Amino acid sequence: MSKSAPIHGQWSSPMVFVLASIGSAVGLGNLWKFPYLAGENGGGAFVLIYLLCIAVVGIPIMVSEVLIGRRGRLSPINSLALLAKQAGGSRLWRLVGGSGIAAGLIILSFYSVMGGWALAYVVRTASGLFSGVTAKGALSIFNYLVTDPERLLAWHTLFMLVTTLVVARGVRSGLEQAVRVLVPALFILLLVVVSYNLNSGYFMQSLHFLFFPDFQDITAGGVLQAMGHAFFTLSLGVGAMMVYGSYLPSGASIPRLVLAVTLVDTLIAMLAGLAIFPLVFANGLEPTSGPGLIFTTLPIAFGHLPGGAYVGTLFFLLLVLVALTSAISLMEPMVAWLVESLKLPRSRSAALSGFLVWLLGLVSLMSFSRWAFEFQFAGQLKHDGWFDILDILTSAIMLPAGGLAVVIFVGWVMPKQSLIEELGGRAGITFRIWYVTIRYLTPAAVSAVFLYMMGVI
Ligand code: PHE
Image 1 (cartoon, rainbow, N blue to C red):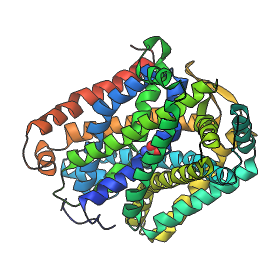
Image 2 (spheres, helix red, strand yellow):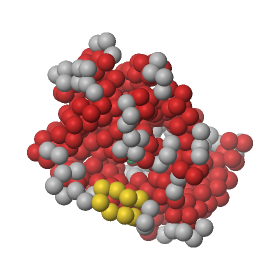
Image 3 (cartoon, rainbow, N blue to C red):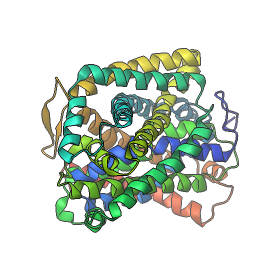
Image 4 (cartoon, rainbow, N blue to C red):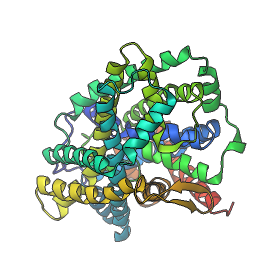
């Protein structure tokens, strides 16, 4: 029963799964969020903790999520329910799928607002607005955009509309070809900016900032955010990897596919850091300037590079498109569940989810303008407004908690034999390392970060 074909269809090959998962993983998280989080949290120590979390927490959880999806062959809620039933576990495990879906929708609500910023920047760069721009000019162009709710609303609406249409058509059509072109192109453009930076005299300073940890620079909140970001960037804890896993043909080696996805995702984030920080230092900007970082730095390079308007336009266009391939995967778990459980047609499920997310997006949209306010979270994370509340609630709390539940489920509830079956049929050394990791190391690491944040350790 557990090996039945998924009702939503299947990827035509394991390679398509890798491409779709890279499409999900690589997105605003790598280019927009990673640099500003690293900047806000002092650089090196944050990056090191983030990389450790990718290895100890991210990769093992991704294997577990894909495994649940492929074995259950259903949306996250129903796969978990089915596998829990088979293992004689509690019905409550389905709640893990449910809270993941909720987290995914919340994330999408602000993701779309940021996708809207990127859309706005396509037009701005194409119009030559940044030609010869100074750091001050770039900053005021950014502030002008984010304090204009009507304009933001238009871009957010457009972004959600496109996401909904693509999901309504079914995630598979076109995704493969798109990612095949998008990710290498993004890679090349990042290299263009990085090589522009090589001559700026601030490259070494940036390397030092990003890769030499000074643990005095990081707070407990920063540690939590580093772990949360490892989940966010790998699309974990929301069921995205479970749904994509549920469309994966049997027989493909899950660990190998997961490693490929993780490697590409991490590489893109590091390149983004090296594209952005030399510009920050060369122009006397603040690394701690927050979510606007990419939008106030890269345009300076595009304003001075020969042909920069073209390079810049293409860059922001790619940013929109990789955001879109991530947005699709944020919505898919909800849509798959609506199709399965409420028997709604795919188009109606997508429209319903899209509308909900659009509505919720208005909250984040306003947090940069009319409803702006600052808050403190456990005395640690000082931030501005609803966007940050939703971001911290999801990335730093819901995703790690969901991931923790997933490894406990796979490590302690599912029968070991079914895991061996799903991961190639024999308990070789890779299997044993993974199994010990998800049973002990991953849960211990996630719990330790939570306890550290709460001041218990
Ligand atoms: N991983 C995506 C990014 O880095 C965001 C995302 C999170 C997508 C969770 C799906 C699920 O941009």
